[in-house]
Image (tube, rainbow, N blue to C red; front, side, top):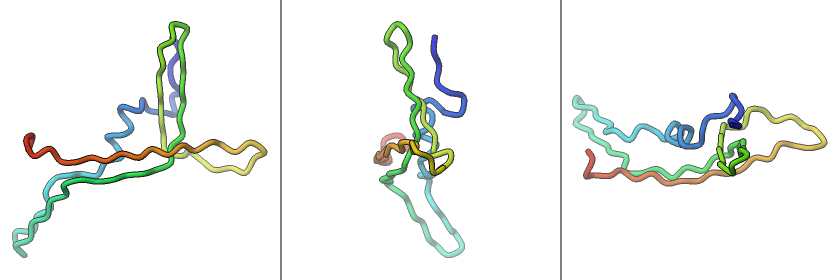
Length: 90
């Protein structure tokens, strides 16, 4: 079975790592409480897409590893997603 390059994470593992901590920001001394309810993120990523002989697709991703001027520049894809706090799970 073909696997993604070891420099990449499976996309399902990478995306949660890009999210900021959505916990409450609290300063009891100053009496301040702030809650992040969502985040909209857009970032370039490098993708490694592998299809094994049975047709199973594995997608790996990583922030751009490097930028090097060559005759064939790497292709940077954009990933954009929105995360919203689920009040029911707090």
